[in-house]
Length: 460
Ligand SMILES: [Zn+2]
Image (cartoon, rainbow, N blue to C red; front, side):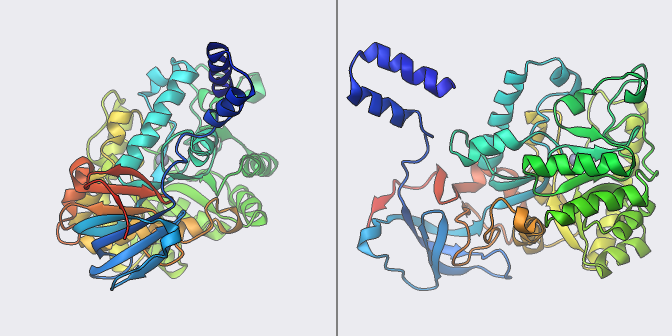
């Protein structure tokens, strides 16, 4: 609509005929379609997203895919008019993937609830761009009405990562997604929608029929997976963290809907009881998991379940939280070391996520997750979690995968999501904490969004 208005204003100003009409139709399209069709990345040391080492080579990107990877020279056909970029011997990696974000949480909670929706949308767009400039070419959004933002990015009207969206998270009454105040009555006593329900962050559904409807609703919006709140949480005021939320039958109902659409359910679950119940229901991914005991961690490993956890969000207690929230926060923080040791001991498939909410300043800490994981993992293990490991989790969306192709790897045919890094991330992972310095080039979907290197040349 705004594009149309801009176009018609232009027509009036120019006051010309059909030629101008054609020109304005062109300017109404997405802005970022004028990049070269092919790039040859030369003089780079490639880390492919899986291996232990880097190896010198070259990479040819055509359209939005990696067409070839070679240890020797690549000679692209002249009709490609490939633009050559000399990487100066830098390390080339796949773009990073964050498995746990909330892109629509852009302000402290109360401020967000009092803000104009267009202001919030503008911050979401800025936040998406900032995430891409931190090297995250893909994000998995596990609660929030992010479908419009995803569409704007995919269509080229906004700049940001690929988005795998769950839509609204399903919560029971008085569960982790129930954001009512003490004085708000429940719906069955005349209460209305909560703020989180009105804005698509969560949906309160009780009993099998409501869970079926709520899960189908998310799939109808284009969700890549279903998110269910299966235990108490830390950020919420009222639900104790050690409780289970949802009955086995309710969890199975969500799993049935996801399975009928060919995808999976992931659950917010901190404790062992909630995690065991979710696994029994057929859930395939656990978010958080900080309080899981050893037998439950072993069960996660034995069943090949993903553990999509996040460390950075528990580094510093957020300001302005209640005493009750603070106590839960510290409990989770204290349990983190044991969880990570168990996950490592049983070789659990470990997602790399951050869960930073309540403001763009807070989200700016996203890359600190790399540094914090060094306590338990080597740089290459952490990089694998943030690339090919997370990509395996994304692929569980099956036919609901919005980007059906290889992600998180540097291989022929994979999406061209590529970073060039200043320094040696396989030796010192902490350099990635400062992406403005560390990232020399950011390419997503075959398009360049940051390039510190010398101007590209047509060649060879
Ligand atoms: Zn979360």
